[in-house]
Image (cartoon, rainbow, N blue to C red):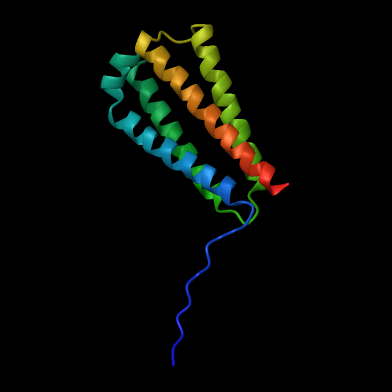
Length: 135
C-alpha cells in the first residue's frame, strides 16, 4: 500500500521576510526588464537619456536576481537586513535626486522617481516587519 502525504505549509517565523524579499525581487526584476525593453520611449517621458534608462533597467534586474537568491538562504535574517538597508538607500536617493535636481527630469520623471521612492520605502517597512518577527 502506498501512502501519499501532503507537504505541510511553512509556518516558520521567517515566512513574511522571505515573501517580502521574493516579491520585491520579482517586481523589481520585472520592472527592470520593462525599463530596458522600453528605454527609448521612457527616456522621452522621464527626461533621462536612453543609456541611463538601460543602466537602471539592468541594475533593477541584477537587484532582483540577487535578492531572490538571498531570500533562499537557510538563514535569511542578515540578508534581510542588507536588503532593508538597500531599500532605504534607494528611497533616500530618489528623494535627493528630485530635491537637488540631480537629473534633468520632466514632471513625469519626477513622479516616477518619487513613486520608486515610495515603492522602496514600502518594501523596507514590510521587510523590517519580517525581520522583527524573527526576534
